[in-house]
Image 1 (cartoon, one colour):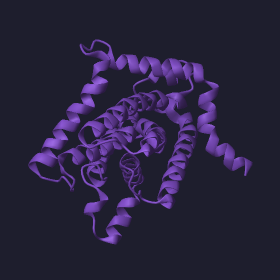
Image 2: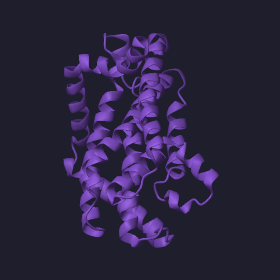
Image 3: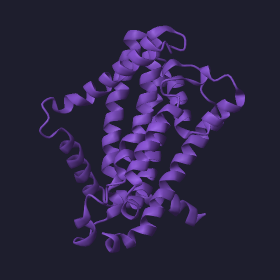
Length: 270
């Protein structure tokens, strides 16, 4: 049991031991995003709103996939799905080149390489926090007062961030040995967007077997859970939510262990 607990906690304990360095890396990562930008941090608000507008026009206005409840409810459901998806995808989309883009960290200096995915996850957390605030405000204006359970939305996003962290470790390592990893990840994330209930909801899936298959995607559980928390409706169920949390935690632990196991060969490849 001690070995299992150490395995599950090591990704976080190692980061906590170097929290000063990690804080500095995260600060630089976030600041670099807005360096030279005319609007600066304003993109934190503008970017998700622009994406939401385009998706709402295409899927709601042109294709008419409002799923019931009108366009206002569509905006709320769509934005919720986008937030959960991007909390996962923002870090994983850049993970394959994390080590490749910093060869000096591998060959010339002693640097804890396992910290590299954390700043991208910190940036994804910042974007998710801003977008969640916008979501609550949009729901308040367009739909009505959110349910009191909306205060739990930040907690419901944590597993998606952990899934992104775990996969980032795997992709960062594979990216060193297999240079096609970045392209495979990019295509995979595009497919995952449409296979997850971002622009559609489980209410549109009437076949029980298909619904179960969809729920095997952890992001689907996260999206449906966040929508239920915002609207105060029944969610996917306690068993699915517990599975969602456990899978995310296990993914982080396995991804970290995979990275540490394979990083010894980075210098030889680079």
